[in-house]
Structures are given as structure tokens and as C-alpha cells.
Image (tube, rainbow, N blue to C red):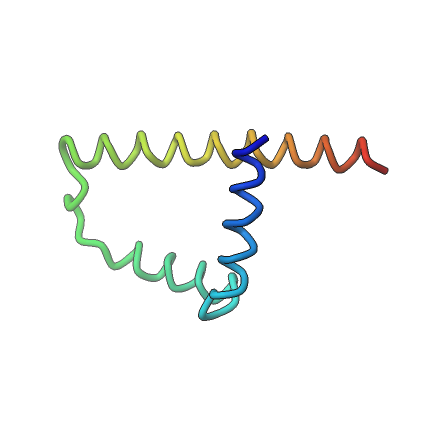
Length: 75
């Protein structure tokens, strides 16, 4: 429960202090990702980046499903 409260507070603060719209940020991140030199994330650093990405995606999916379920049950 405390995790969800912290997550909610983080989202609210992020929305209040975001310098630009999410679409603009995603576009800039995609653009910068394309500009990364090939081989930059090779070896141990690349493996750690892939693992961190997988964990982030799993956490996002789990949180999204939980919040969707809770929201559906409220209505």
C-alpha cells in the first residue's frame, strides 16, 4: 500500500514539474536512442541495461494491471 502511495505521489510530482509533454519527451528519447554509437552498450554494461529494461517493463506491466483492476472494481 505504501508503495502505491509513493508511486502516486511520484507521478503527481512528475506531472507538475515535467518540462514538456510526454509525447515530446518520448520523441526526444527515441531520437537520442538512435544516435547512440553502435557497440556502446556491449559486454557487461549492455547486459545490465537489458536486465534493467526488462525489470522496468515488468514493473510497469504489473503496476498497470493492478491499477486497472482496482479502478475497474471501484466502478
